[in-house]
Image (cartoon, rainbow, N blue to C red; front, side, top):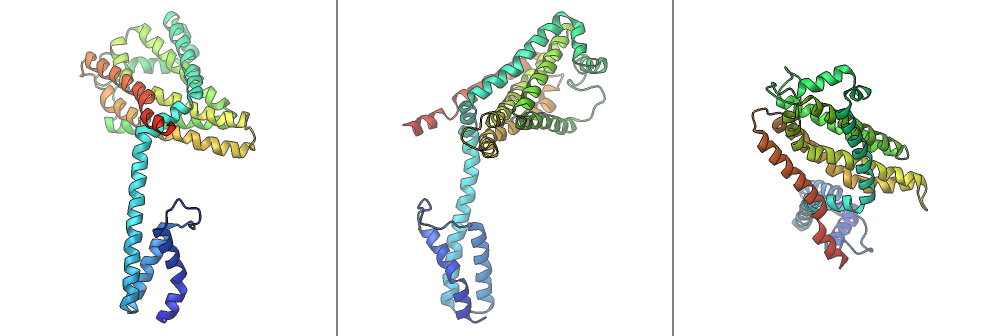
Amino acid sequence: MKQRDFENRYRDSWEQLEAWLKADRNKSEVAALDLPVAYRNLCQQLAMAKERQYTNRLIDHLNQLVMAAHHRVYRQETLRRKGWLHYLLAGFPQAVRANSRAVLLASALFLIPGLILGVGTYNNDALVYAVMSPEQVMGFESMYDPGNRVLGRERGSDTDLFMFGFYIKNNIGIAFRTFAGGVLFGLGSIFFLVFNGIYIGAAFGHITRVGFVSTFYPFVIGHGAFELTAIVLTGAAGLILGRSLVDPGQHRRTVALRLAAVEAMKIMYGTFLMLVIAAFLEAFWSSSASTPIAIKLGVGALFWVLVFAYFILAGRREGATHAN
């Protein structure tokens, strides 16, 4: 291909890229551009120009354009990374506060059945068998036996690293079911919130009744700040989906569901991270039987304070700035 034909073939794309790089991207008259694709194509065209020994004028022009595009691509990647940092420092707690009604409803659906079953099984030991099988009850008792070398698992279980993977799988599974159940007009999320509340409440009541308080509560308090809060938040995200289907407003249900999913995922991304943190703590910190009880309780209480402070305070200054 002659240089003139080469220039005629690609000149429009070069001019479009140059205009995009020079212009303010917020201006509506600037055509939309897939920068990574344009950058890759430009690199190929520069390589072709060098291989075919086109004029230095053309090669220098393309080389300068490649450098400018490379700088913009790098800056976009940096902004994406900063976007995740902003989400963790402000976006996640802001999304939770913006959907406070769904969060409060999910909290009630989880906590009230849990408290009822917790008090019930503590006062009536037979009630736990309405929720769990005798084998499950025996398994819980063996996991929190004060004579165990490690807590939260049966004797002879695998390593902490294996349990870390197991806890991640288990936690993410619970979170996904609770969230995805929202597409059934919210009924699935309600069911899983109530079920998990009942199951956990029954476990708390029974273990307290049999007297394993010194092992059970120091075990759960650390990772529970992240795990239990995340379960409630995934339920709230599911309720957001359900609300869009029950009351889609002026939109069709499919459109309302898609819009609600965008809002719900602002919560779900953060809960997945919380569940990974919970799994790490459960496998490597909570399971230790050698750590003094006072330290476990103190650290666990600190985690709860930090989690609540994060969702109440984080990102408020930025929100107030935008409001002004």
